[in-house]
Length: 291
Image (cartoon, helix red, strand yellow):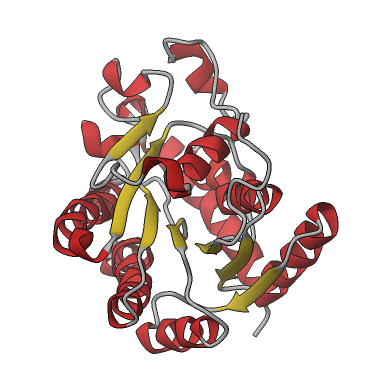
């Protein structure tokens, strides 16, 4: 779809780049010639991804183990990256989410999502943006949001609220920072099945199974479609696109009252089973991260 070396000379940071959508987008940026930086809470995972992608593409990948909820740690990482030269692009992809009846949420459960999605996204954007402004560098930020900001987010209220905040940040900073040559845009993907998201959002179902039945196009997203859109927004050929949120979901948000509206039909037993399944996934992840 794109000319060879479209992103040559670009230095792009992808948060949450060790797995899932972040890893997929990072792969495409490398294929198009970018120098890549990825970060995530589990440095071992990011290191393994960096090695895999560099080996597969021949590109340059640097990995960091950083919890983006920690503003000081974020600033230290960005300072380290900028020592070898400024970033040209940032993809805010790191996120957390799980399904729950809102009345069952604890403050800790709400914060688990909001601190990553809203606070963490701001910390990274701020740390990069202030350095771009100080150094008189332009740059492009692409934030991954959700289609629920178009309609509603029942049973994923912390995510819906936080992603709405990121969308508003995108539009606000597009206006405030545009004069510095800094662009901010957002992508709202529909269902692009990944293992981690499916286990917390549709436990017990095949990834994308329900979407294929209700989507106007009768399928889930193909990863190359998201990869190509992200690359397009970071490329130099569309530098007047600023402050936009682009939805890529086959039109599903036009026929749906939020992606989890059907869960209103669940009874207490089904919610208990879902909570237990999500808890098991979280415990497995904590064990993998180690002490």
